[in-house]
Image (cartoon, rainbow, N blue to C red; front, side, top):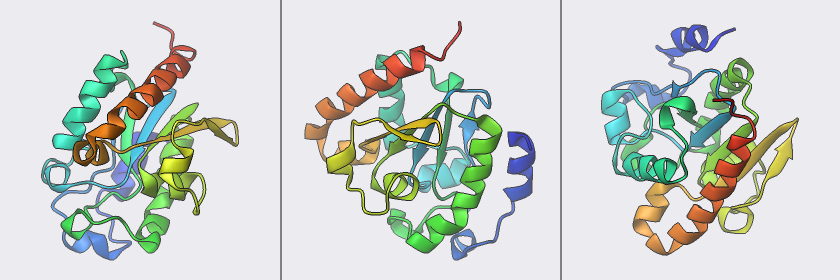
Length: 185
């Protein structure tokens, strides 16, 4: 199934209680043929309002980080573990992530990324290891079923904790270098 069909199927999703308060579902956007996929935690207020991932302050920081690493946003795919905004921008629950991971897995199958960047602890736990701590695993490539994953700090975390920006920049340089191995201009 292609990405467009998946998004059509889930655009009215009511599989978990998060749908009750959402304005728009945020399924993701970008290049469906990209070797690189970024997976965040969940939509915030700006994303819920616009129906697009990473368009608020954290998204603006992510855009600057991508630009500095010479990774064009329009050439990658960006999504989240959960597709609807958790109340008060809280961390998604295990149950919410478990429900939405079905959609994410279908997106993986359609896109077939070679590299996945887990932005923050929630996607790191959901995709890599339920016991993982972002401060311990960030910056390391981890292979799962032929796909290389790198956990790094979420841009929202970096807005609250600017001392983490140096480590995140190191991660983005490694992501850039890996991405370049798969890109044909």
